Length: 227
Image (cartoon, rainbow, N blue to C red; front, side, top):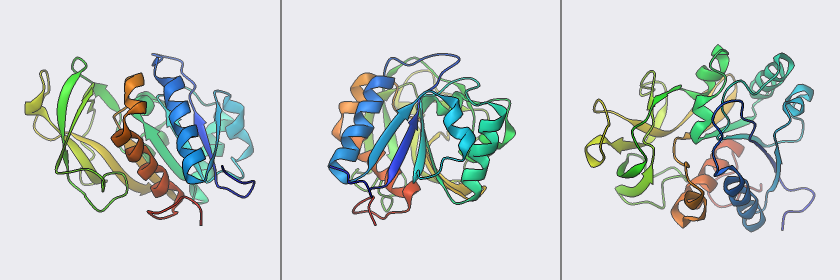
């Protein structure tokens, strides 16, 4: 179990638009990973937590947030946290968040545009060195909504995995990054577009994927989030 000196992760799940039924499952997954791998997890929907600077958190996770979820003071707090070298992780509908705040879109790397119907498909793993994808083969069979974005982030981010649009119905275009990392505004950033259903958060490969994201944004290395 995490000790009092363990890294702390804040999982933020406020929604003012569509709310995913998988949010409780996502919180449970992060808490389970924390118990297994030595980090503590606080979960909240209170935007006031951002107004005090997020002191003591090794990373912040926006888990299927949607709409405008931060106060003006909270935006200032998150930006200051990033500038101080904080870690930021977005999961699934985090890309459907804070459309009116340019910094957030720049931080995440892209903003959600559309998705076809939920269905099985194939991801192409482009980077086998990253802890979020190192456990996967060259392809990953998964079921999700196969997000598409207003602008393709490739060239601005390190793409870890992309969707094979020929593997499902309703995709447009040919290049669909879905998982990436970047640095922006001082922050280490990881984003995965996956995670629509409750079932995803009990999938061992997806849980390992989330853990790799946490390891990235906390800067703790591949073996443990703890230093």
